[in-house]
Amino acid sequence: MNISIDKNSGFCFGVVNAIQAAEDILKTTDKLFCLGDIVHNNMEVERLNKLGLVIINHEEFKNLKNEKVLIRAHGEPPETYKTAIENGIELIDASCPVVLRLQNNVRQGYDKITEKDGQVVIYGKPGHAEVVGLAGQTFNNAIIVSDEKDLDKVNFDKPINLYSQTTKGIEGFNSLVKEIELKQKEANTDAEFIVNDTICRQVAHRAPQLREFSTNHDIVLFVSGKKSSNGKYLYGICKETNPQTYFVSSPDEIKKEWFSKENTIGICGATSTPRWLMDEVKETVNSLNLS
Image 1 (tube, rainbow, N blue to C red):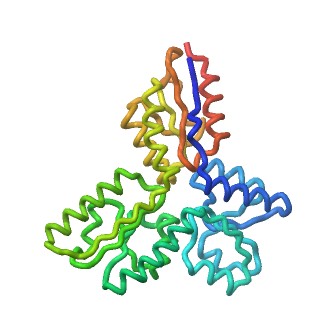
Image 2: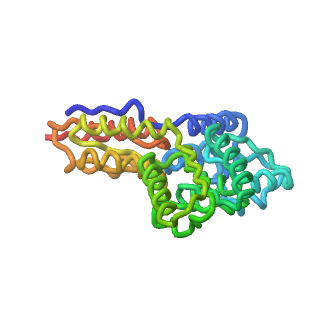
Image 3: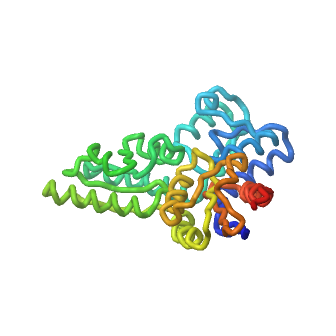
């Protein structure tokens, strides 16, 4: 039995930066608040909890006074920074630079398109932390669409400025662009349509890499937290390429009947999956004593 871990899987830059920031601070203090899960992986969150990282929600954040709070890679809307100033909260801002740049672009794009009585449309998961931060740049006036079915919220007679959550799939984004163009044509409108491909290429490039990785193994174990949007997308890529792909969030979920000793086994994961967890999955498979 041959087992290999995909060298391209694991934390993206933004997540590495946020976790490093948390670990550095927790070396000198026994408690640090974090606004929302620092990463969409329960086992990594539990590891950091043991070091003193305390996850809070926005309601709890509003009630804090004179504390240190980490902003995770997903970014935050303007209201969060306003609350911090009012409550004397020191923010450790670990927002991903890619997300911060996108927030700035959305804010500027919103100002320009509203002058033309237009709309900002964001392709993303409603309620996702990054999407909440992006929508906040538009005073929550942006139209959030997760797929073509949500396009009934859009007025195709008015200008459209389209952006994407950074961790969405490029295929879905391109499909949405074509659908909007089709609906504009059906509406017989010459309204402006601005397309901003704001998908993070560190994420987008993983799709073709994982297609190749999945093809080269009999069995694929995709390791990810169940909350990870990026994980669901990349797992779908692997499953489509290799039907013998299994989604696992922890080594406990591995089943012996999935394997035989002749299999080549590939282990990969999302941008929110820690390397140590993929290593543990490999150790668990090695310990199965397959006959």
